[in-house]
Length: 368
Image (cartoon, rainbow, N blue to C red; front, side, top):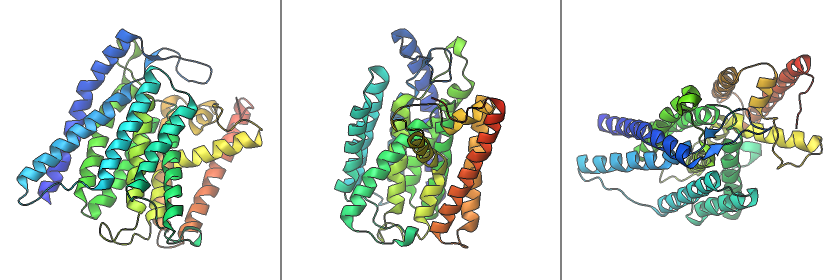
């Protein structure tokens, strides 16, 4: 056990160090090539900010993870790294999504092209025989057919990627919510003694530390501030989605039956996923195109209510943690369907209250 913990910690710290080395290099590269996130009517920042922070995510994570696994293999008698088909497809999928994000950040891609690449990357999971095959009682549904599970897996993974991407609207928000979700997944896999996933998660968590430092506290005038861009948000969303699907797929050879798999998966990403559903519903109610960007996400609304970016960040993190506490408290008391229904009611009540504050301040709970 101690060996596993030390190797996992080494992956985390290697990733932290790698991020602190890479991000300043990326900042200088962006300054030299004038690769900035330019302000517009929909964005909150007022100055040009480098947008390639996510470029550091995948290299740092893989360097730390592979190094840690090699150390583990050389220090554990008889232990070998077994590469399964889903692992190969997972790496290919990450590379596809990462490359798509980098190209979009540097050259720009239309929404259809990005969606097409997301679907391709998501389709790799069912092809590798990794898919959602059980809903563990949600809406009264348990085991589901492979074809239905494959389609559901693709839809869920594409949705999670876009949810993490769309919530990336203020400093630190997407990375912080991802850290919360990764912490939950780390705890889950650690409890099941699946240390390979723990090492992967630790490597990804590590690189988010230097990014958050530069993203939240970096000074624009010193060229220390950076955004993650689509290369970061899409990569985070893809890896999170794959880990959640891996957790949700019932496979007795990997983990015993997890009766709370659906609930825990929803809980860990509740705020970004609920926010996407709410924004789509609001756009439909106001007869707006559902894919047209606007300023009606939760962070936009909190700032219209009078909060600063950092105050909005703290409130959203607190909201996410509150939902986790509520759902864990109700886990053994109610069926998963009822718990998620309660989550929806609380989320609606939160936004209804927020709308009251916005109307008192500026009278515009919905804006273009």
